[in-house]
Length: 64
Image (cartoon, rainbow, N blue to C red; front, side, top):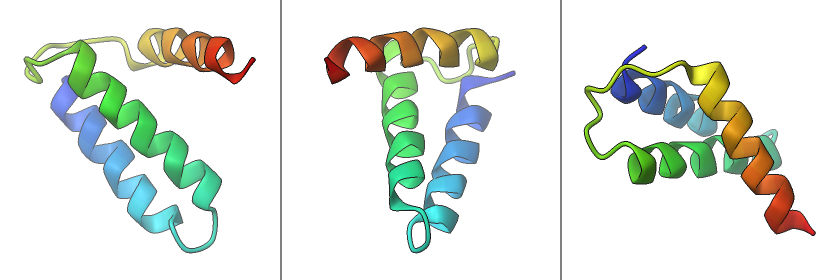
């Protein structure tokens, strides 16, 4: 799936969740930021599940 569509999806989820689940909203925002940083060409096709798992591994590293 194209990176730009994944970013839009996560930003939309963040907007919806901001009022009732701010922790989840922040996770969506951090992942969207990660995608922009890692894939400046947002027309790139990626496997969202694989990249999300890589992102989560990095998040675990910074939580300790």
